[in-house]
Image 1 (tube, rainbow, N blue to C red):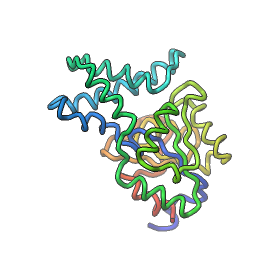
Image 2: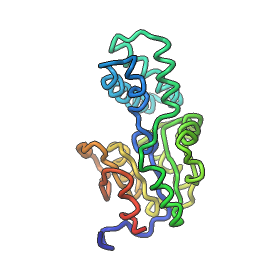
Image 3: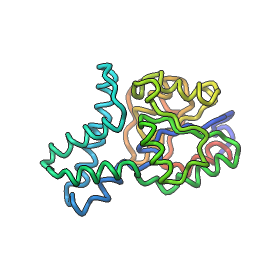
Length: 229
């Protein structure tokens, strides 16, 4: 990769959590014994409603934290798929607290920290959810900040959420590299003013909205080279 194609003067890398560092399909996958052929459908619908509810609650001004949103969206998905099983619901929610990290996450964060780049999570997740996920993946020593939307009580892509990273890291937006696997989040962060890399894990189509990521990669292992580390 040429010097011209690398991102220059980056002081911090800020990561979305769900879908970017942590596999949102992992809970359903680990319950495949109970879900059988409905596992993939449940994972997809659960995630879709989870995102929809964050946007709707932001528009309506009736914030509840992401743990409650996650439970309500699971209830919707289970009802839609005619799954009536309280024990299964409990199991799925418990597993959502300890989602698997993608395999390249730890090595990538280690490379950034070794190069002196600040690292942070900026997530819709509630503080307790993020603490549990970070501990499960043993990432505590690799992150300078873990920032939740809970302090501003509104969800991404509202600009006040992205401002939390600017304030917490004490860096201007153009020195922060924001990374998300969610195209809508990448677009929102770029519109805010971050230097954005979209982690397009599943070869999705980009959003047709203002705010375009500068770079697109397919997993986080590609990040250190893109930053010239």
